[in-house]
Length: 114
Length: 116
Image 1: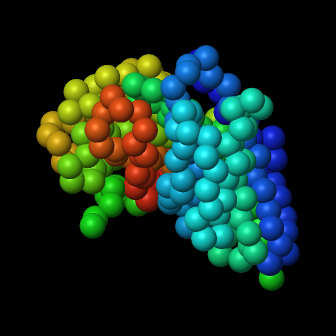
Image 2 (image 1 turned 135 degrees about the horizontal axis):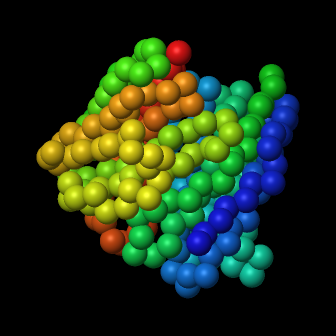
């Protein structure tokens, strides 16, 4: 069975700081997919990014970037120059290849203060 | 494009009453998921459907919970009889291309259920 651990329960930063959210996953599968979701105070869950286990290329999308390291089973998410609107709970999730079941971490609550 | 639509957004009812939550997935999506979110247990998958067929209901807490998907554009999650411990936010999500694994699930805004 898969497991996703987000060790940081809450993070508080000041606007314009960079912030990295940690995610460690456990899976025995060779093919799997990793996701980050955002849940703002309004409550909806918003898909942010997806990575495949066979593609370790890290990318940058605007103020978001991620670091996927298979050697350490980590899939960390970084927000550059944080803004107050980034305040939300961020969830990391994992899904094995061929399955529809998404396993979520407990989430990290990010507060960006002005 | 319309996202996943859930109704109602909020539901407050008394213990013992039947509760029905509704979901309309994104058009063209073949997989539909029901989740429950609580502070204690986080996000839990209750059941999911591929092409309107229930595939895995191992997350359904007990017989009081049932889910149906009569067609590709509608699903219900029913709790009968409801209990205070069922109070939670219930999310519906949908995704395309079942079996490929790499498709993200897109979530509705959720139904906040309170059982008094």
